[in-house]
Length: 215
Length: 223
Image 1 (cartoon, helix red, strand yellow):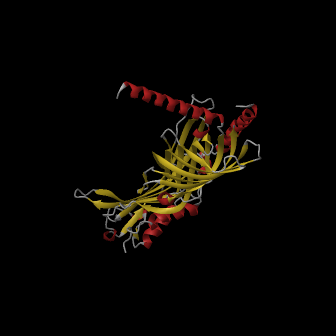
Image 2 (image 1 turned 180 degrees about the vertical axis):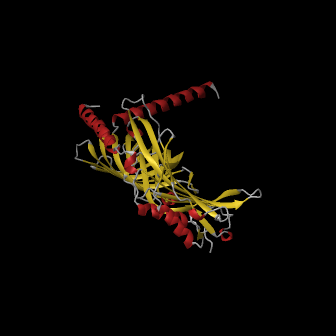
Image 3 (image 1 turned 45 degrees about the vertical axis):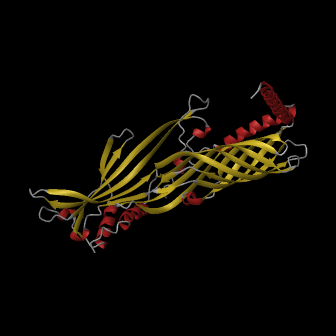
C-alpha cells in the first residue's frame, strides 16, 4: 500500500462516516416513536400445554418502536404472561409404592425481554399494519403446588417472537390509538417437573393495548 | 418533544401506573385455599411385603391428637372421635382380613397387622416483608415469583402475617412378628395420610380421602 492509496482510504472512510452520520441525523428529524401498554392473553402450545392447558387471561406488556426510516423501526418488548390451571384431583404414582391423590395448582410464568425490527406497510395511515421480529431473553418459572407445598423451577432461555399487528389511531391527527397484535413465542427454556421433561416453551398471544405516538 | 407530546407522555405514564395497580390485584394466600379441594390422600406401601401371608389385624382403640404450635411445641394431647377407625375396619374386612378387637388382644392372640392412628394439627405462621407490587404474594397474578423482598430499595413496603393450620390423620399399619428372644418387632408395611389445611372438613370429605388411601393401594389385599 503506497501513501497515495492510504490517503484515499482515509478519505473514503471519512466520507462513509459522514454519510452515516448525516443519515442518522436525517432519520432523527423524521423519527416517530410508538409506546404501548398491552393487556396480553394467550395459550401455551407444544409439550408445555400438557402441563398447563388453560387459556390465560393474565399478562401485560410494555413495548415501544422507534423509526429508523419511513417503513422500518427498531422495537423493544418487555412484560409477563402467567399461565395457570387447577387440575382436578387425581392419583400420582411414583412407582416405588408412594402414591398421592390430590388436586394440583400449576403455573408457568414467562417474562420476556426482547428487541427487534418492525416493518410497517402504511406508516402514515390511520391504520398501520406491521410485522415485527423480536429476539431476546425469557425468564420463566414453572410451579406445581399441592396445598402449601410447592415444587418450583426457574430458568432462562432465548426467545424468538414474530408478531403481526396493527395500530389504529383515534383520529387523523391524534397521537394516540389502539394496538392489536398476535404473537407466536418460541422460547428455549428447558425444565423438568413432575418427572416429565419439557424442551421448550411455546405460546400464542393475543394482545390489545393503548399506544401513544411521539413525533 | 413538543408540548402536545409532553402532555400525552404524562398521561401515558399515569396510565402505566393505573395499569400496574390494576394488575397487582390483592389476594391473600388464604383466598387461594379452597377447603373442598385441598385435602390430599397419601399412601406408601411396602411392595416387597406379601399381604396374602397375613390374615388378622387390629386397630388402636383411640386416636391420639397432637397439637403443635407455630414454634414446634406440642401443646395438647387428647382422644378424638373414632369414626375413622370404623372406616379402616371396613376397608380391611372388605380385603379379606379378620378383625381382632383391641380389647381382645393379648400376648396369646396378637394380630398380624396393627393400625396406629394419630391426628396432628400443626400451626404455621409466615411473616413476610413485601416489597413493591410484583413482590406481593398474590396467587391470581404473581404467586410464587418469590423475587424476595426489595425493601428498603423501594419506597412502598409492608409486612404481612399469614397463619394456617395443617390437619393430618396418620394411619400407620405395622406387621407384628415375634423375634427369637420372645419379643415382638413392628415393621411398617403400609402408611396412609389424609391432610388438609385451613378448613373445617366434613366427615364425608375425610371419609372419602381415607377410603382413597386404601383404594389407591390394591396390594393391600389378602384375596
